[in-house]
Amino acid sequence: MKLLDTIKRDFTTMTLVLMPVAIAINIVIGQIVAVLKLPVFLDSIGTVLVAIVAGPWAGAATGILSNVIWGLAVDPNALPWFPVAMMIGFVAGWLAIAGWFKSWVKVAGSGVVLALTAAIVGTPIAVYLFGGITTSGSSFITAFLLQTGQDLVSAVLSTNFIVEPIDKIATCFLAYGIVKGLSTRYLSRLPRAANIATS
Image (cartoon, rainbow, N blue to C red; front, side, top):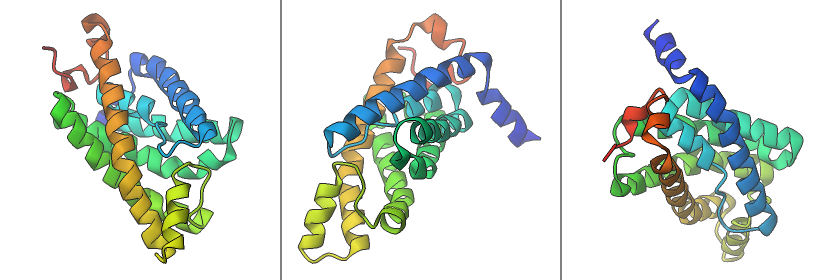
């Protein structure tokens, strides 16, 4: 029953209003980055945003819905990555509850933790579903590492450990910056407003 109450706490009316906006942020920025073949993703800003102010379950749901909608409506390549998006939202939510989004230094630390999460969950998807080469610009790094003689799993992992920290730290900073820009009155209506330092 306690778990159910925790889940229900995340999904207030304000959360349900915020989630579509966050999903749109994920898809629009993620698609722009994918089209430009940049070696980052930036497709989890909305997910982390929701996770910070609404909690881990709402963050996970935002991540899943973002990739499912993106995959079905815009780019089918986005769909298989929903487990990564889900775990980013879930872990970011727990980090926020633990106080990791109360200062810029801690936000950077959150980015590192999310990078490790994404690398661990994403590597098997990249290797077994895409053969290591995806539509992301980071695949150029993987291809280069394969040419140097690394095996597929090592090349994908190495790429993830290069790209993910940059991507997730930037994602956390952007999400945190957006949250800090929200009015105190608006923030107070969200279920996890206490995750953000008011000063």
